Length: 434
Image (tube, rainbow, N blue to C red; front, side, top):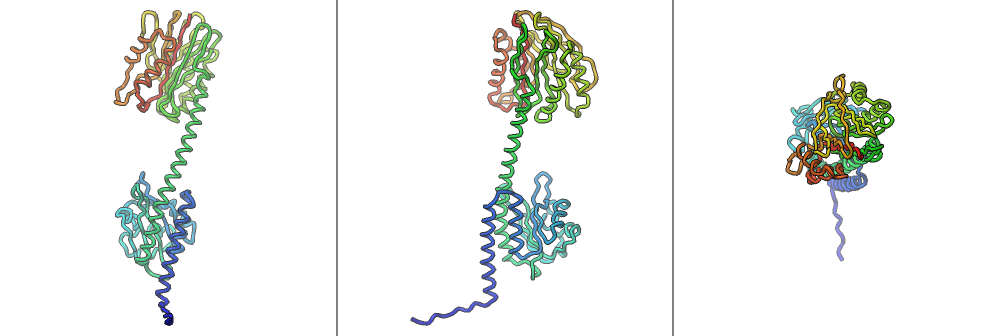
């Protein structure tokens, strides 16, 4: 066997090979880091700290693109001084095309800048605020499946005046991993936030339901009251209530808070609480609405309540009611269905006023049907609105049905055909049984 020949590699070439191996190890380490956590802030901090060390640079940063403002915002800024990074995060943003990072974001191209102060694209804002001196830099766009995510930068290489093309190649490979990891982390963070909001809304809906009558039906003497409500979202602004106001008389309220969602639900809770306090011991519906109106006079602008409040005698069926800007109600008798639109005051919570009182007497078997405007504003999948006349028609056809409220609710849901509900729906019935 012949002698083995030794191959001599120049030290400079050997150093280059060793650096390439170290860089490959760094990329593998970064892959491990990326798979180790889905926490966005922890992930980016770990990856950029690793990049700063391996690239042997004075500083590094990531600017995220805020789609709402159209600007780049510092998310990570690592240097020897943590306070400088905090200053950048709080005070510096860049528009597309502004500064090196803005140029990279606008053109979606990486760039090597040898002498930053001589480059016309360079913005001195960050250096002026922090006292840092940017000499040279690498800037690479972070692009994911949804488009621009941000820009990653490495500043001032140690022992060299300028970053090399090889540095750019390694940093680009790193940034491709960063972009994927950031998208995954953001998706995970958003998923957790959506789940948290869902749980909070479910809890809010449960709490809101606790403000409504514990049972959907209430009986007192010859009277039977029932109600249903379907919020357009988890929580809504419609409300109803019934309770004995004074001995032998039942108070019945239906109301509709302006708007929808959480703000209306919070206002609804206040209205119900104030109403229950004011109704007891008072036999005048106009007075009760007037007092409630004063209680709500300091509510936020644009928040108000339309309502009907009726007080009915549990024996003889006599009813006194006051209306505050609410839609008409229906009076069902043996002769048919009458649309009742008595003299009314404005919605509660707008101006100080008096609320006129209307009196009527329910005969045996007669009933009042009160609704919020969401009932006749229901739309189907084709966008066709149900309308008030269709509600009157349906009520007329089923005027003798015992469970009219449930039937009307089923009719509304059937008409909608599963279309998204645009407004809260509430139906209340006041019926004299005998």
